[in-house]
Amino acid sequence: MVTENNTSNFFLAENLRALRKRMNWSQEEFADQIGLNRGNIASYENGTAEPKICNLLKFAHLFSISVFDLTHSDLKDEESYTRASRGNQDGKSMMQPPSLERVVKEAEDIQSAVKGLHCLFRLKTGNLAEMPPECQVLKDHFEQLYSVTQHLLDSHHELISFIQSKCSEYKG
Image (cartoon, rainbow, N blue to C red; front, side, top):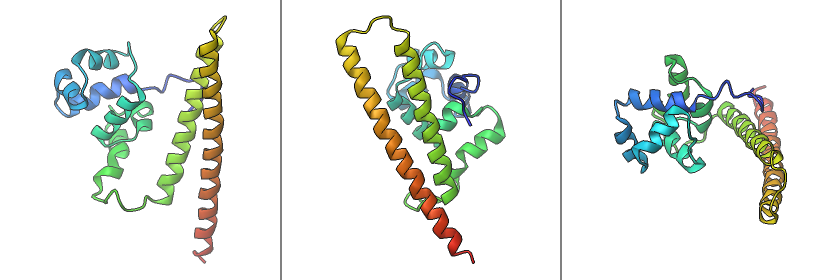
């Protein structure tokens, strides 16, 4: 499980470079695939900038891996890359329902990502000596959004638990 303060397992820069090279793309070619410029890609690969969430989603879709694997798995390692991309390489239609194990793993990944975002937000806003009123409003809205997200995640976990209990009843 990813801890909120641990950045030693954040592999985005290295993974973008490794995945781009795996595709035999230059930074320019990679940038064209996403609709960015070469400088953006260079900054992301050097770790001097982090992409917006919408670009993370584009990267994950382009490479057929989850955002969590893109950021938290060392995809330079062949076994990790195979594991991360296996779900999209098995020929299954995206319309088929995912396995219960996959849903549980994705729920854990989402929970971890939300906690990480909240931790980062609190760290960044906690370092501000004084906050302008308009920023305070945004901070309050973020906290409300986080609270709603936590409620939805709790409901999601309850639903997964219910499904798991029903599945085990049929295995008799």
